[in-house]
Structures are given as C-alpha cells and as structure tokens.
View 1 (cartoon, rainbow, N blue to C red):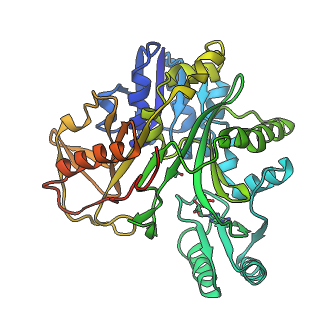
View 2 (cartoon, rainbow, N blue to C red):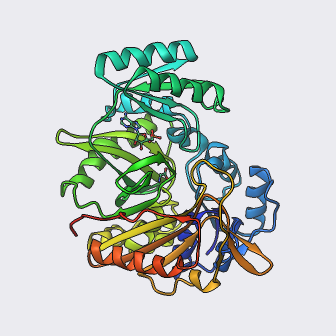
Length: 433
Ligand code: AMP
Ligand code: GLY
C-alpha cells in the first residue's frame, strides 16, 4: 500500500519507523516531513504552505491508499473532511469529532451527556465571568482549574489553589496572545490522584486498545519545574488495577462512541484518553484526537503488532481480525523513553550549544532501542540540533530497571560532548515490572 504520513515531530518519526516495518507498506510518503523522517520515505512534492484541500487532492492524484495524521492541527482544520470528499481514507477524525480535543467545552459537554466520569465544570465567556466562577470554585472546593477551551499547545491550562494564581492565569489567558483559544473557558474542580493516558484505535469494527502510558510533563526530576510537552514516558503502568483497561473501555470509550453516534459523528483515528486515578476510581481529564508525544514513541516499541495492518482494518481496507488485534495481550516487559531538550526549553528562544548528531544515531536497526528526532535539521549535509524537544531515546527490556539502564547508558554516550542539553534522570524510576 501507498501511505502518506502527515507531521514532522518525534511522534511522526516513531510512526514512520513503525509503518515501514509492515509487510503491507509498499511506499511511505511524508509531508511536511523532516530530515530524519525522510530516511523512511519520500516527501510529497507540494509546498509546506499548501492548503489542506490541495494536499488531499495531491495525495489522491499521487495514488495514496490512505493517510495517517500525526498532529492535531490538521484535524482541527478539517483535513480529514477534505480527504473524505475525495474518498481518500484518513486515519484521524473529521473536524466535528476532533472537537473532542480542539474544544474543551464540547468535550466536557459530551462527557456529561454520555455519563463519563470527569471533574465538575462550568463553561464561561469573558474575563469577569471566568474570575467569578474560578474564585467560587476555589472557595467551595479549595481549588480551580482554568482551561482555554481552544487549542493552546499545552499552555492554556492552569491549576490554581489561591486567588493570586487565578489572577495570573487570567493575565496569561486574556493578555498574552491566547485570547482566541480563550474565547470560551472551562472552569473545573481539581482532581486528585495519579495521571496516565490510555490509547485506542477507533474506526471500523470494535475499538482496539493500545494500552496505558505515563508522560512526565514537568521539566525536572521529581516532577517539579515548569510544565512541558512531555519529558519522558513509560508503558505499561504497573500501579494501575489489572482490569483498568476494561474499566476505561466500559466507562469511557463505549459510552463516548454511543454519544458521538447519537450526534451523527463517527470517530476514526487514535483516541487519547487522559485520566486521573485515585482510590475511588478514575475520571477523564481530557481527550485528544491523536497519539501522544512522547507516548507514541514508547507504544510503537512496546506494541509488537503491525500498526499499518491495524490502521487499515480501522479504515475498512482490510477485514477486521479480532485474533490479530488481541495479540497485544502477549506484550511483556517495559518500555521507557527519555526526551532530550535544548537548554532554553520550555520558555526561552535561544539554545546554548548546537550539536551535530551522527546520522547513524537514527539508524534504529535494533527494535529494542530507538532514537527519534523532533528538532533536528539538516545543515550542509549534517544533522544539527535545534531548540525545544529535540530527540527521544526509547528502550524496551524485560524490566523497567533494565529499560531505564539501556536508555540512560545510550544517552550518556550520545551527550558526552553535547553541552546545553537537558533531560530528566528519573523517567521510569521506582516501578515494578
Ligand atoms: P489538559 O490539557 O486538560 O489535559 O490539562 C493539562 C494538565 O493539567 C493535565 O495533564 C493535568 O496535569 C492538569 N489538569 C487538567 N485538568 C485537571 C483537573 N481537573 N484536576 C487536576 N489537574 C488537572
Ligand atoms: N504528551 C502529551 C500529549 O501528547 O498531549
């Protein structure tokens, strides 16, 4: 099959690596791609500023059999709808269903209608109402979470425990370039517990769970420091109850599918369920309409199934095979990934240090140790680090301690002469296998 993968980050690099391994992948096409991604396929020859409709038409004319969408923006913009108009199968939901991520107000309203456990909430408009409801929530419950309803690159959520932090959140939401995402705001009660996420491939046939992962969002060891896009991740999640997956399918995924279907919506793509677990059970923190980053990087190594075939089944291009999809039960061991970020991450713009990464770093011949790139660009035939989250190192082994040791030993070698790189040293620490 001829497959087109949309995106350019480490998640897409991991997906490209996975898609390439399938016996049904004849050609992998990439857009916009990246220097490291392009080792896995060919770039679709259309400009980076192409309109989504034009990209879909170009892909169709190129004879692409189906498209896999990595990031959320194309989905919010209606790329899957453009594909549908051309009968080009797309793994990623249409705009109306992608609102589960792009509108937190819509997502909460759907959860409430479907009876899905989630924090109590209010939807507000404008700074005055936002402050009023947040302060009321704080006084009533001891805390308040303030969330821009629209996409805000992970920067639009504020967990507040005093009036000063509510004030700071309002300043960020209404006066620092986030006003569009914050046209509508969700105020919700603070959930207590441990966070993890659950991933499901949806489409034709029964939904196929991929499992749970934990992303470490804070910059520094011990879960302190500023929030980031994710500094490292592990799967599976040994502190969850054994029936956690079944419980989430029953209380979240099935009611969600039924509620969407009542509204005439069908969800095709990966559903990301953000969860908070405590002694009383769990609640949904958020939905995303895609795989997580860096969660995708651990899942592609941990899940030994052929994702290209799985995706083709979800798109109705191959017959649904329950035997095949249940093979995940045979997954064993542990997978840990660590993100290497530039010195200026997450706030600054100017990294100290610039590192030439040997091309061999990304050869990824060993399926139990892989290196995926985000901010690595090509300069005069060399691969050079940029800024932000740059590289993800992933290892699979029999135990968490062995997987950790493998990732960190590799990172010690890779970063020996690399100044100004930051990474956490405690990803996957203290876990049972
Ligand atoms: P979201 O984008 O909605 O996932 O929020 C980003 C992060 O904010 C989550 O991963 C949580 O760490 C935190 N968060 C969001 N909502 C809540 C909540 N109701 N209670 C506690 N923490 C929350
Ligand atoms: N790792 C968090 C996300 O992808 O949203």
